[in-house]
Every structure is written in C-alpha cells, then in structure tokens.
Length: 405
Ligand SMILES: *Cc1c(COP(=O)(O)O)cnc(C)c1O
Image (cartoon, rainbow, N blue to C red; front, top):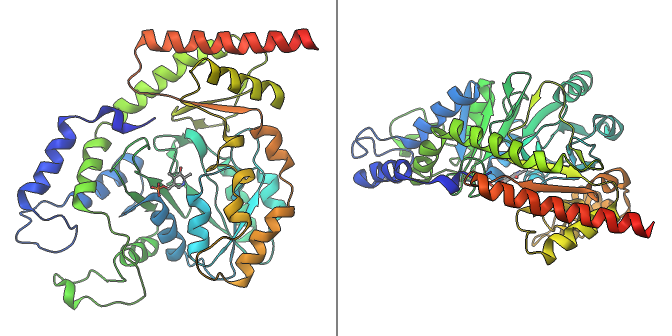
C-alpha cells in the first residue's frame, strides 16, 4: 500500500532542490526560486499520469474534498449522498462546506450500492460522492447514470485508490471532479497533501483560487492579485510537493509490486472454500493496496480476528466493523453532532437522524469483511509465512465451528 516504504535518494534529491533555493512556498519569489517549481511540476505530472486536464494540489486529501465541493458550488442545505463505509475525512469535508451528509448502504464492492443511492434522492440532493475504498471502485457507470437522470454532481473520493482504473480511465478523473490524498499511508505520499482533479476548466480555476485565499493568480505580483471570491489557505508547500514528485515517478513500480504481492497472498486465502472476495465492477482494475475478503458469518469473522490477535499476526488485517475511523457504527462523535462550534440546524438534524437509521445491509457485509494491507517490501519468504499462518488460523477456526455445529 504505502509509498513511504520505498523512500530513497529520489525523494532526498527533490527535497534538496528546494532547500538549495530556500523557497519553500509554491507561489511567488520568481527570481530567487531559480526555476524550481515543484508543486507546478507535480500538478503537470498528475495530469499526465492519470489522464485529466487539470490538477490542483492541496494541503491534504480532506482539504482537496472541501475544495472540490466549494468549486462545484455545493454548500448550505445541499445533500451529498455518500457511503456508510469510508474514512472520516469524507464527511468532515461535507460538513465543512455547510452541506448535509446522507449516508447510504454499501454492497459487496465495499462501496455505495447504486440502488441505495436511488432510494436516498430527495429534492435537496445535489451530489453523489462514491468513495473508492481500499484500492477498488464503485460501479461508476450505474452512478453516472443516476446523476445524469437527476442532474446531480458526481464527485469521486478516490483518496484511497491511486492507480486503480475503471473502463480504462483512472479513478478520480471520471466524475465532475475527483480527489486523491497523499497523506503518509497512501499509495504515493507527500507526507501530507492532496489533489483535486477535473476536466472542467472553471472547476480548476475555482479550486486554484479557493486554496489560496481566493487569489486570482493572474499577475506576477501576489500583492496585486484580485480576489473574485472567498477562499482559505489549503496550499501545499514545495517540500511536500517535492516528495510527491519523486513518488509519482515510482508509481508504476509500486503498483506492479503491489499486484504481485496481492496475487501471492491471495493464493493462500483462495484455498479456503468458504472465503469470498470483494466484487469488482466490470471493467475495473483494482490497485491491489488491500485484499478484502469475507467469511461466511460474523461469528466466524470475530473468531478469526481474535485468533489472529492471539497468534500475534493481526497487524495489517483490518476488521473495519469494530474500527473507530471507517464505519458508521463507531462514528459516535458524528451521530452526536459533537462539533466544537454551533452547527446549522439542518446538519444537526441529519446527524441525529443517523441514530435511528438502519444500516443492516452494510452491517451484514462489514461484519464479515477483513481487509489485509499489501506491503511493497514483503519478501517471497515473508508472504509464504504470512499466507500459511493466516490460512492455518482460518482453517482452525472453521473446523472448530463445524464441530460445534
Ligand atoms: C485518506 C483519505 C482521505 C483524506 O485524506 P487526508 O489526506 O488524510 O486528509 C479522504 N478520504 C478517504 C477515503 C481517505 O482514505
């Protein structure tokens, strides 16, 4: 999964280029920076590698989502339909622009169920935001069709799925806009950072201004820039962009290692007849940052997780159902609307309503799902050992349960 596993001389060189000029800011200082523009260079590389017209770097994936929403004109009173399984950042961004998160069930793709999206549409719906969790994707054709029928915005949270594709196009470049995160554990990292990708010029121009206090960036003198709209400071620094530049050049290598290690480990899990794997929409290519697999029942899954822990091999295996960050069941702070500041009444009402909303369809999937993170630096020996140990645990637990039954 994470690019940080393979830091090397390349990252050091890019950082040193910036340190040699001392200009750590991405805008201005045209003379002293001596032609070093790491953020601009990384934006160009992103458009080339992922195949989109425009890319705007930001300080994080969370701020990339907020920026995309603002640029798309999503705000007060607007409902954004999003999945109940995601990272907390997705709803944080929705709340930050004054919009209302409407959580819907997922299916065995581990992303939003198009039928649940249809059922959640109201006159206030403005946007559908699939989150491409754990390296693979939502059924984008089905979601795009729904958006077309109801004139809704399609915003892809592709923060976790750098390098995956759908029908030949990179995730994050298919909707009206899409985002990646480059935080420390993502497929490529800037330490902290994110990007808004779009093929629409006006969304790009708005994103560019929004992330820099609304500056129009039309002149060479920052002080003389006009501010056609309000913005914030969600800028990335040159140091962060420098790391990302070294990382994006190594992405192909990361992805091929990821795929190789995924395949090798999966071959062990495939030996258990009762195990199923997440489904991938037709035309989709998984980035292979995780293997997500299902056991037949919640009881078995809990027992396997407990045994993995006893044997000291739970690390890298995520049982999201009990995890505090990724699944609605444990988002108490969200359901209690525990903001530090007063929230608008519509938002509070929507969050309180989550307490009485059933996510039984998602529970039935998440309670049986384990995602195993794929490392880039595993040796063949380590994969064999990990695979054999996991296999032994699963077989032991399944046998015990068969005997009890
Ligand atoms: C990591 C992540 C984000 C946001 O990323 P940060 O860069 O950590 O702010 C958003 N959505 C999802 C699904 C993520 O995994």
